[in-house]
Image (cartoon, rainbow over all chains, first blue to last red; front, side, top):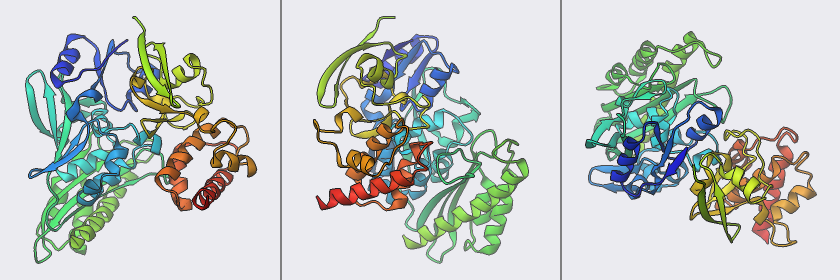
Length: 285
Length: 158
């Protein structure tokens, strides 16, 4: 197994396409475990972290840009992101331990393509878009279009995610992410729910995106959940409709973490709780 | 495959080593540099026994490739005491018997030091969450948490 460190996106694409079985490395918190357990045996590891624009956080008129290989710990310390998108920060702070967050990245969490990835529903709810770089140049792909099935993505050979674009937070907007695990820390989501919403001047919901994790083969963007909130005052009837829509969208597996019936039920409960937090944040803006 | 020649800084010393791509930073520290204070518990980032600082960031050295250390700064448990002078956390762990078998201790100390540098006055809850990635199968954690809280108080009053 060889190891190379491209300094530019062009070099990275060339390395990823030149060798059959080349694999990108960002924080390594999933890849190194797969190497050790023999789940993966790439011929070449391409460490993307030396590409200048793959790390760091910046903002402009279009909103925020987070480099795909920025460690989660660094994002969680960024005052601007914490203020604008606290739900995203809630999601990424649930990924593993303090140690894991020192290395883990949003690009890696997404490309690992687990249905239970904690940052992904939050990114989807926030309306985040990926800058995908590859042999054909750069294209922008909404986060919800990356994961196609457990462990698989829509990225073509030689493509990788350079960064994420998040819109500016709405004037009266807020987001939140909640997950259920059977303990308080260091576990994999049984259900995750991300909600982003915005209010008009009279308190009517004018924008909503709801995403669920760990209840289907991929993280879901649930249009019916958004419909339940849009035009409402995010009151009890709207939240009840939100819970029904969230439960209806679930196609979970039965496993040791939770049964199908449990996950379906909890998805509705968590979506409502996350919506209440997002609402409170929107009202405080 | 030729080995990689890596130059890095470990506990303020410039060191060079050769490693294969497969070797983790933990493998390199223990097997190439004979710094055996960092322990391997799980090898999958779950237990924290291999915790080190990488460019000032707390990480599991079992989840870092050795070759990634090129040009970086690494701080391990071996650099925590200054000569014979133990770090206040080390002193407190001994005084209060916050360890039994000792396998988790280097990782716990490195992680606790990182916390106190960031937050000199943490709450007990903050200590417990920060150390959630450091598993200890002996102490039941209470002695560890109390030693960290007490060391923090001593360091604030020093």
